[in-house]
Length: 173
Image (tube, rainbow, N blue to C red):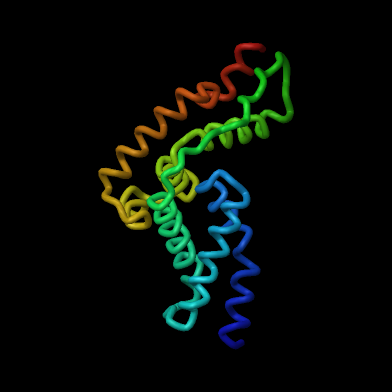
């Protein structure tokens, strides 16, 4: 299989997973698509230089994280959140509770600054260590620790219902 075909196969197979991570990093579907597209374009340029194409996804993710950091540094416009918090839950069993938690988490993540959101995504969604996250974002481990603490404190403030989503259900029974 030629370089072009192997890259096309890689991009087709891994784009969905990359989009999920990019969405969590950016908080916006269109920005996530732009981030993945830019990352894949840079991966394509480096495709022949990759020693082991089995590491292509890791390479692409690192490019994606670094691009996101460079976009933060360029943009100085503050985000404004327009979505409202979800309505309070009604008593009784709710089969859509997992969806409620996901929507609440998504809204809460959107209220975080981009750097804090990225740190949480890398640490808790992507399951990277502090050192790995620091390397990917090109910052110190101390920055990762402080941004994680600030982000978690902010999440607790903007979405206290995320602290224990099942507590309310238990209290009603």
